[in-house]
Image 1 (spheres, each protein chain N blue to C red):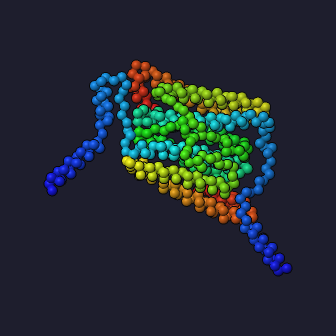
Image 2: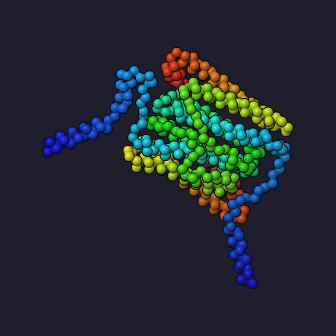
Image 3: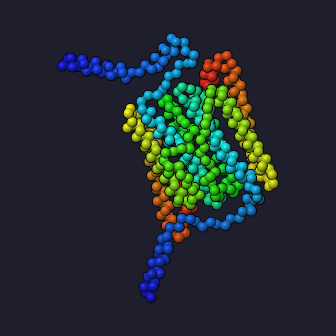
Length: 223
Length: 204
């Protein structure tokens, strides 16, 4: 029994030793003994960053893309013919949020030793997200578009979370980051918009809904 | 007779229950917009300027991402360029709001902004400042030519004044700021390159 414990302990020590990584130390040692010309470079990459980097990249792309779509939607409702300050405010705030998200994600991935490629910033694997929506829509349609966008964003956040929990090795730091920053808030956002769509759709279910839409816009402005 | 009445009633209910999504477009006079811009050149260039500001925003984001990297590690530069990216986006947004104020953008907003790929290669902090200064110079030139176009008949007096007062003002102070930073950094790096850039980054 004792010998078994000793063996187990020994195996444990070996496992710990193999998990430890001397790459940077070795780099520095090699660099200093050989008088190399270029400075020694060490990396911050650890855990499952390899598994989540591409997912975060595409989530950044999607956020920028959607941020500008929302910006244009808000602009459309700011025109004198639409003149809906509530819708304008709603979409502008969502545009700002997605832009901030993109910056937060850049900070996250670079904090982990990753990088962001802007040479393909317009690309996104989700072709539906890439397809160009016509944004000059009436109020109810635009809320529907917004709900779809929020679901697309949520799906991407979920994808990054999946990569971080199912990849080998895991990346709990990214999983935690996505949970804390995005998943809860996205669920709220999806729920809020679906509520808006259903409310407005009920209000509009009559021959002349113009006053109803006006009141709904006033309501949005106060949110 | 009774049946017909019932049918009519049913029809009335059906019509009443129909969803009406598109509100009828109201006739609003357009004389107040007062822009007999037949060539549409000024508007066209305004739209291009918006896209240019958004592209600049993306270029600054790419620079900020570069300086955020572990192997580059220049948090001061990164924050500086994140801030620039926000400012450029804000410029685009302000130009859009201006067009709305002048009775534009009642249609065709979808094509106003495209997300365009940018290829940014940055050698060093000084190189980034140099590129940023070049970019700002380009933007300033573009605003000047926009002003020139919008001064032609019909003269968009207010837009020209606004562009000159708000946009050129910010461009000029921004350019001076970048040139000053580049000058200081270059001097700091004259003999102690790496140390100079390290110290400068912490002051940014």
